[in-house]
Length: 212
Image 1 (cartoon, rainbow, N blue to C red):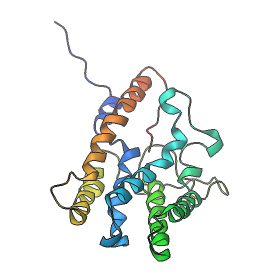
Image 2 (image 1 turned 90 degrees about the vertical axis):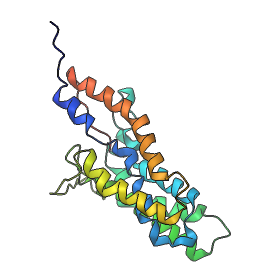
Image 3 (image 1 turned 180 degrees about the horizontal axis):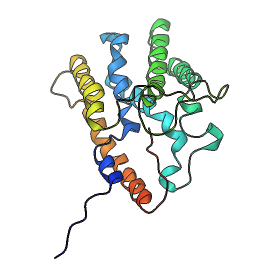
Image 4 (image 1 turned 135 degrees about the horizontal axis):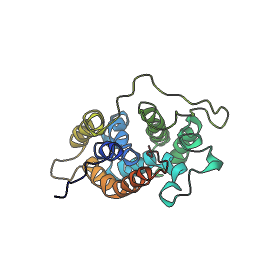
């Protein structure tokens, strides 16, 4: 009689782990109250959500077995640094709609900088992967928090996604589909297969680290 094999330990860890690269988009919603209701639009939140995931571009080669981008110092280095976040913030302020006041544009810039910086901060609270080089390229010293609660799906849902859904509902009428929920669905659809492939590779002796 055939016996069904139990999932490997790495496979079980994958099943409870959030695709964190895109989950960072929740920071855009959670930080949006700093802008005030009059400045928050759906387009702005979408742009900030994309910006929140951009730091993981340093690991863009992983799905193609090409590794991390060495020019950016590897994963969780230059694109996760304070300087990169400031650069994105300045760019966002310069690209903000011209009909906005100068104060509004620079407030949006600070918002984008904090959203991007939150990516590295949240990564520092995960137990997997390297520490964060917050001051790259000036210093490649990597930092990790002693407390690392984001080790699975449930902590991220409770701490990030549910509060983000609540904040979004305060900004927009309930009849609209919450952008955070759409981001969650997209993250599972887009990043999930890559995680499965990475886990399969680990099972045959290949090293793999989650992107986040």
